[in-house]
Image 1 (tube, rainbow, N blue to C red):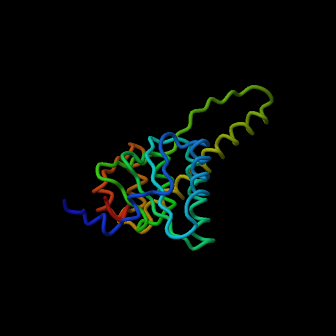
Image 2 (cartoon, rainbow, N blue to C red):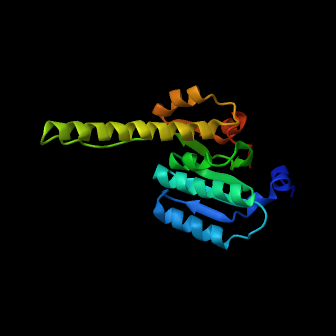
Length: 190
């Protein structure tokens, strides 16, 4: 039996320290924090995820934990996406530099715009109605700004142009592992 060259080049990826799967939510965040606390304190931290999506703010929160770990300890963190890295999963992936991102064979990334479902009930004094509408508009504007910051982080250091991502995101952009590697969104496929 021959050993894959990836096993030689990336042996750490075979035994992730943090294994995440399912919906990106506060339960996943709790598991994430618990697993990081139990991980060895030295060497690169390997985090793997398989998700169909979830709460983008929780994904950003987990990503911020990775950033703080990297910035304040100097410790590397490696991302390994398995099977499905959809929606909030790609938001989490954006927290890792492209040269620290990997996907397993057959994995797909899916990137889309944030969604909102909201009904606005206007009732009462006109000035109150105006404030209600402005508050909803501000929520949308800031959500777009946060989305674009995440898109910029996702493509930073890759061959993907930010404008292309913005153009493709409304139609749910699915990217196969090998294409993600060729686009420079990940370092390699294992």
